Length: 248
Image (tube, rainbow, N blue to C red; front, side):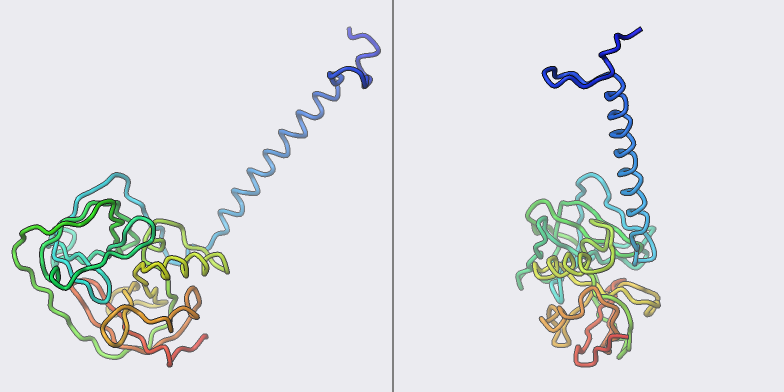
């Protein structure tokens, strides 16, 4: 049985009474559990606007294919069981920088090492080393023009959207996408309805190069755009005219 004075606070000692110590411990544990439940609940409410989760494939891999540089760097790998017609993969460097393709590399064999991120049929390699030229058999890089389309969707950065981060909504989502795209990461237009069988379209400028600064006011917003669509391997490229932009 405890002494009577043990239930009282004594200013000159650094010990709390046993009853107070137990009470404070229970309150602290309850507060911690409440914060964990709140964090879990908020995470569950995050909007996965892509209609499916992205994956960051663990482990560095080596990829070989034919490189093209317009509108952004694409590695065209040889056909396999999953991609009978070949496969085009976007490229970006660690640190949200673009992979720059010199004119003399265009259409040549390239080897890259890096991490693979994937969302559905959309794939990007985040390179961890400088790409190097290799000898590979010549491959077809035909461009198929699919005409002019009116498409509604959202402009996202291809690196985070493919799986490096979970897409969200609101100002933080827009700021993240804008930061990545300002660095030169390839932009992707995520259509609300499939276009020629795909919901993800790499974006480019009508002149043939990367997207102009006219894109930035519409990043992360639902927008309707008119523009030309073309197929490069199994990758669709959307070249919108931003003067046609409508925010539904």
